[in-house]
Length: 424
Image 1 (cartoon, rainbow, N blue to C red):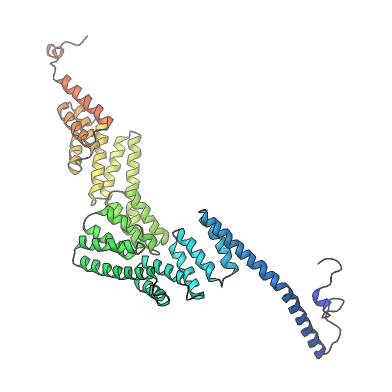
Image 2 (image 1 turned 60 degrees about the horizontal axis):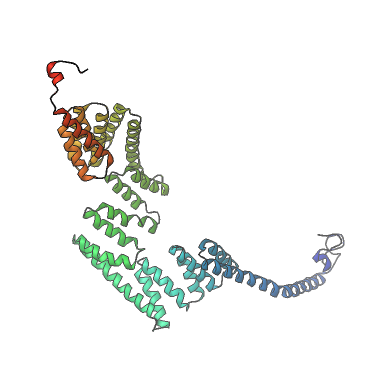
């Protein structure tokens, strides 16, 4: 407080000159002074209130205008910030909630848009645009009963609203499609169920139940990749969807993708580090992944014996999922061919080839083992077969030419050897 200014209450005569209480006043006098002071304060506030309200409204309008401009420019995050400020400044304005909901929708955050639309409807029950928007979101989520209520409310106020009429018809179609898909699934008609679910998911792309059911159908049909594509979005469509993360991890694991399997099970543990099922699977995948990674590092360092031991350990860690045994045998085949152990390489490569007959690397490594064993005709056959699967591979082309050259040379009679004479 600047020098010479008096406190408000002292100026009103309620405090003494020393800052203490006023000299002895009777109860009636004190009451009169308090009433007078309160009246004076009300007058002061009444004089200032219109200016404060005008300033506040101007600030709100400024936020809304900035939000509109940023939205038009595609700067959604910045626009959202201004709409946050507008809502905080005027929490009773239904229109600001609605505008903020449209930003959320533009950003793909439909879950965040729902509370704002509901608040706008609460503040203005006859706000049909908000009803339609909420109904559309609920329909896309597969919440047919709640969506139906919104569309029927719109039609009650405006029976000619074509959008509400069309969406109400889609609600009926969605209910029919989901009912028929469940019936087909229970009857083990998985292809038929997928047909109904295709239409259901087209109408309600944010419904996790439809995607989960179609994923199950694909699993029964043996199409793991399509099952994964349907299951992945459900991890975001459901809160704390640890079951989906674990299922995805096991699917990737069964396909031989241990790295992605590890990524998915870690997402499960982020939600709950004490989840027993996820932790148990995590330990298994982590152990296998470490063994395979170590083996590959040994291969790069040309420590082939160490690499072979790691691959054998990996096969013991996972003896039931064949793809890991096949991969390990293929890599052991490679190590043995590089380690100049031709007969052992040929044996394990042949076993790996039977498990994975289109693997060009196994064919290449067996061809190299045949060359070491001076079985050039078989080397040529393996390189030719590999080239049929990958005709543009330069390494295979060069290998085939080399094997053919060696085969041709081997067919020439070595007279020096016959006569026991060393070449000059």
